[in-house]
Amino acid sequence: MKASDLFVRCLENEGVEYIFGVPGEENADLMISLLDSSIRFVVCRHEQGAAFMADVYGRLTGRVACCLGTLGPGATNLITGVASANMDRSPLVVITGQAATTRMHKESHQAMDLVALFAPTVKWGTSIQHPDSIPEIVGKAFRLATTDKFGACHIDLPENVARMQTLARPIARSVVDRSAPNPAPVAAAAEVIRKASFPVILAGNGVLRNLASESLRAFARQNGIPVTNTFMGKGCFPPSDPLYLFTVGLGGRDFTDAAIERADCVVAVGFDMVEYHPSSWNRGEDKAIIHVDMSPAEVDRNYRTECEIVGDIGLSLDALTRATAGMPKVDAARYAEFRDALARDLSAYDDDQGFPIKPQRILADVRRVLDDRDIVLSDVGAHKMWIARYLHTEEPNTVLITNGFCSMGFALPGAIGAKYACPDRKALAICGDGGVMMNIQELETAVREKLPIVVLVWTDSQYGLIKWKQQTQFGKYSHIDFTNPDWMKLAEAFGMAGFRVTAVDELAPALREAFAAGKPALIEVPVDYAENMKLTRALQNLPFEELCSRLKGADLIGELPDSTLRVLA
Image (tube, helix red, strand yellow):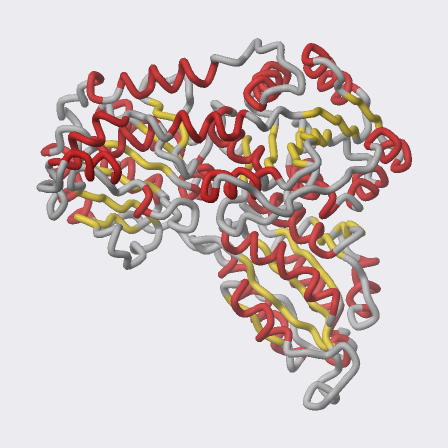
């Protein structure tokens, strides 16, 4: 059997349905082998977009999708999307073509050490030097990509190896059962929780990867423990539940942060430190931190754990639920004020009539039009912060935010990956006019593949998040302006439906018409980003007096004059 044929058979053996990529000369043998395969190759317009498609497909299904590029610029174009999938914990295998082994040792056209290049962006990677090793290499890459924490693996296939002959055959896949937690740390954690006067659950991306949302909900409800989630943990706990304290990680001190400051115990479940560092939430009273995850805790001065439950997150939460049975529920008075205040804030602009449209009103209309099973993908920009705070969902994996690597250009190709993963559900990419242009070419992919995604572009002709941060830090901003194309002509050129919102009451109808169009659609909506600094100033005052009083009781600084403590607060 030809080595490239064997490689494809091994991918089929691993259950691969899609490869997203751009063909090239050095992967030509592999491309020809795919002609006789059940695997669907999706031709993309840029390798970065291909990697984002595979990223979202893997995140939504828990199964590996592949992205592919040739050597040299094809490989370097893949890097950003692969790094994003790896840091956001999505299962992915990236395949690169490579120069023949006979010329890799010397100066050679487009050749570079791709294993070294990808090393910081993947869990594991290697170059195939002999065709007989293909089954082991493919099997190892897929096993590591789907071993928590999920991530990306890299396989480099030199062109001369791809055309060699081999007698090797795919290796049968083995199923690895998730490990149950050790009873001792479960008992220790239960004792810590029983002694706590105000425990809080901080749920992260790992809850979704481990399909542990129902176990989390059962544990929290049994004990009356309030729950907050990171950006990437959205949907693990429903906002309709009075225990829900919404999303943490905005960067400012929000109501949720104030509640965590008051807590004396934080149960961190599937928490990913790359999203929101503990130095940002481990403030206020001394806290006992209980770590529940498939992996031991990262060593960090702000994340010193009282005990760690390492194992399948769902099984661990089930064991913890049994171990805490009968304990008194947390007094709702400890956290209700924060939930109620934030709930009022989140709905204050649902019917605002201003134009350009306030971010809060845009997201209120998005929620009116979509149901909780539909998928919203947030690009990176100022809109991401508004989505994180204001757009909530009852269901896991329905509001997708990249918050590990945080790359602009994620949402548009990600929506394409979402439609392959969940073809029966609506997919809405929310983008800024900065980020959407970074992978705008993938609109052609969506049109050609007849995928009815909707791209909602918030326009202000600026890099809004950078402006926001510059204003917050320096009181002024620099070099953030650009111009935009005519979005309706752009949509027409790609063969899409196009909608321009010129009044606030036009947005919801435009969304409905876009999803009913039966083909990809683009909506242009002018956004009022004056709300950015208004939110920053509001967060700076929450709740200021309580923080001042707490600083008086803190070690080292508690004896400082009141005026100094107020400055610190």
